[in-house]
Length: 218
Image (cartoon, rainbow, N blue to C red):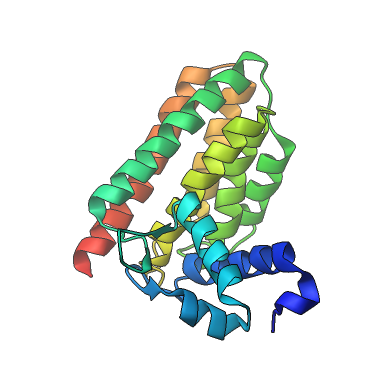
């Protein structure tokens, strides 16, 4: 159990923030669930000021929302949220692909992440989510811009939250994902940024459509 005395106030806040973030992004704490300072304090065995600070960090990151005189809640996910998150990803990643194509830079970490997906059995598998997101993050990180990376990771947390809401549905096909990723990297290697960006838009639009459909079914 995390304690204020063991880690110091800053360490406790960071530790509780990380644990809460993991539980939210895994779907263990569902969309709309309230998180009170008292509940977080009791759950993690920390003082209420530490619990409050952890909650505020997650409000600032966009995973929690707080309205006047009400407890913080996990952000609600609806079809319009999914569309906005994925279109924002598309804008950022498309720009990254165009920039990488100018120098024909293919990130080694993106190649490695895609190799992991390719090695998975053909068919839908939730295990593809982690290497898939690492592939996309590698495109952004290859720009070597701290601010762009920070902005993108905020959006990516929301994307993970969207996925967590439909975690019981096997929406991803490893072979298809790997093939689409490979096409993007081939276009970058050929210096064709527009083709790489067009392929990305189709790739993310497909994922967006599956999530929206699953939310509608729920």
